Length: 109
Length: 311
Image (cartoon, rainbow over all chains, first blue to last red; front, side):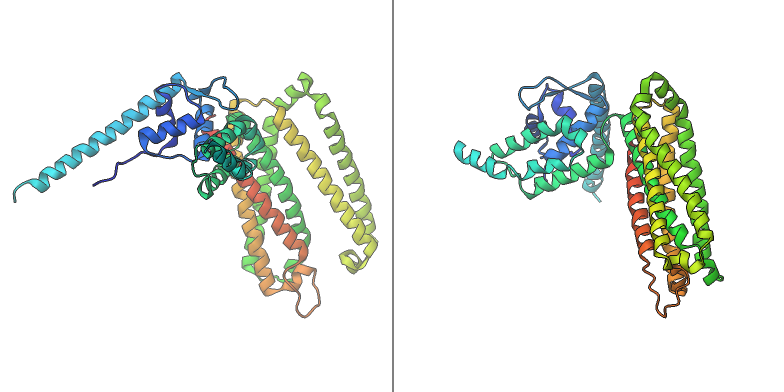
């Protein structure tokens, strides 16, 4: 049985996770595992959070204790929309080529 | 079960969370608490925080150090400051090479490889000095604005220290030159202990003066507000100077290896020893300084280039 293919681009995974609402570090980690099956290391997660915040894609909110939740900004939502459209185009093209290949392989000699 | 988890968390406490110390201080101030809390939550949840997490944290900390913290202007400042310190160290190393290489051409007149490497070193050094001077000149209008807007009291002590050390260095140079003219060549090359000590004190004074001006330049760099076009030019200059420093280091090592292979005595001022060692301590020190300086410049260039994309 083929394994489930999973994207492992931390910024894209974080933006996708935050699209459903604000989350702090650990909640992000758990959500990403749930929907993408990818486990990000804590250093990788906060490295990506740092870059996304620098670029204005996400913003921190006042937190409780040492946890600080983040939310998607308008620029982050637009970035996610463009990235998903690109991925969709690649997926569609891949699907088209695969279907064509199966059709050729399955055609009678 | 909860007690067991608590014990586990306490047992791990000095582990991964202690690795946060490898992150840059500014980054730790902003994200350290959150990341620490995240790791402790992972531990409390029974997740693996062993070798893989430690390696991940070390890798991420190294990436943050390479990248530098803050927005593009702050990273550009950080890159420029690193380059200024790197250049100061490189000048010290280069000066040692210049002193050690005073007489090599007399001992080894027909050595095309060594001549080519030495010429490359000299011409690239001139080019880099001009590039650094241009970078400083471009920042002068912003520096004057900084001084006019109340920056002078913050800089006064550093300016006075650097100027005082420079005046002392100029005076010491004049005195040493006058003294040197009264001595024989062998006395000047290590046989007069008092002159040797005075020479080392003069070198220390020149180095202190150079470092004081560098400290002043980095303080100014931290305070000035440069225009975007100037920042963009600096973002090109920093990696260009870093590449040139790497080229000069390679040229020095090629020159050293060539002279060491053909006439090692030329590296020690014409030593008459049958087996003069090519590992001259002064050159070893110079090579170490140049390598450290080139690494620092590479770090600065990386920050400048990452900032350049966003400027």
